[in-house]
Amino acid sequence: MAQPQPPFADGEHYHIYNRGVEKRLVFEDQRDCRRFLETLDYYRLKKQPSRFSFRKRPVIAKKTKPGKPLVEILCYCLMPNHFHLLIKQLQDNGITDFISLVSNSYTKYFNTKYKRVGPLFQGTFRAVRIENDEHLIHLSRYIHLNPLIDYVVKDLKRFPFSSYHEYVKEQGLLTNPREVLSHFKSGKDYAKFVLDQEDYGRSLKNIERSLLDING
Image (cartoon, rainbow, N blue to C red; front, side, top):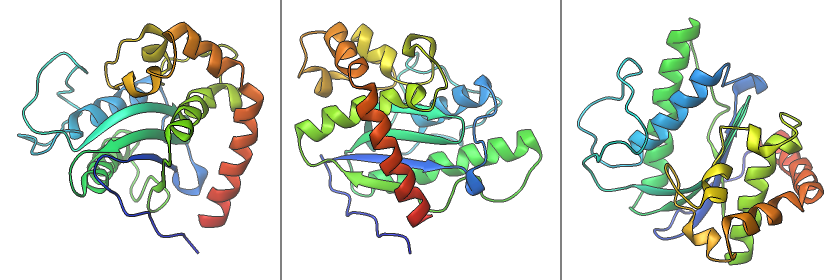
């Protein structure tokens, strides 16, 4: 039986994650990853003027768009069959509305592209409330370690679809890394923190898989 979602409160941080239905791939190529990131960027603002079309994709962080933010994205990582987000809710129902818009938009794009029908993601997304600053920085590390944990790459610098690069460069595009980086001397110091704990992240991955199997 699936566990109920935590009540989402404005100003609080949450780990949001979900995977493909029947554990299927949800990102088949780099274009799919870019599309998902652009969808995150588009729908984080409330009252968009029009539907997001994959035929007219905006460039992340290149234009100022109207609307107040529903959420603030702190971290992300896209894996072949699942995604992770660390986000802060800024408006009532912001997380629920945001994830619903993103999931529906991306599913329509994916189904059109690959000529399929039906749900793409496995039911309702999972959400875990971040309890304190220590939890926040350790979760950011875990999210960024995912490509190493799942052996997608051997060097995080070679993985383009996470916010790890924004943290190392101390320059947010889709994300706001300041809250996490405020606990470190520099982006390089944060990178050392992440890479020194690969084994720790791998153990957390086993915990997450158990939760997905139990609640799926």
